[in-house]
Length: 249
Image 1 (cartoon, rainbow, N blue to C red):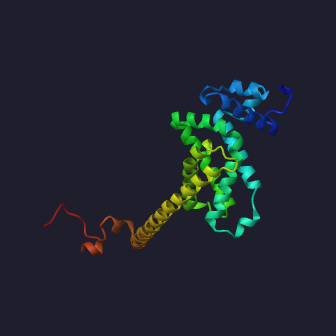
Image 2 (tube, rainbow, N blue to C red):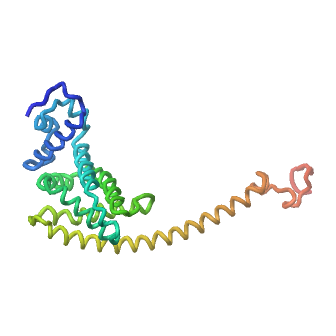
Image 3 (cartoon, rainbow, N blue to C red):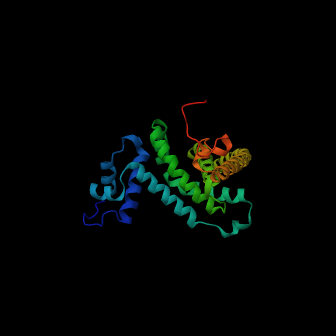
């Protein structure tokens, strides 16, 4: 397929075509060996249009993640609102795996490449954590603040633990994936309970330290600079205007 070179650079159509092309190439090739020029040719766009849409292969993967986020969020089930938080989260993550099914072969190649490249894996973790914040919010679970960041990172680990089962799952209903996700969520719940206890203890200690700091600040705020340095004349027992004469006499 050849696209017109007059197409608007970075247009949404180009972005979608580039993501699809990259996934097709990843299916039958080592992701490390796929070049940006290969993706441009497969997508039917110029290199300039590719550069305008994405600045790297990592950015293309990020584009796929955003696409999956939107599919999951569009599939929100209002009937799940009254269910327990764990069930809501399970439903959201299974919708995510359903959305990932067309890219399973491509993901196998990409995951292998990331295992060989720790820098790419770290970058992917950052993007995955952002997606997991959206998944938490979709499940009605708060994803803001320090606890939200911990929850999002925990979900990244849950997805990572479930992914091998998903990549091997040949069942149309993803039965193996569901079982693996259930186990990973249960383990994650235990870790979160432990971490929450630790955070409460840290919070109590932090409040104690903050109180000590504030009391110290209040004490020093009532004293001038001379007293801070130990030259308070009254406390030292010296007259205010007695000159120093070189030592005791």
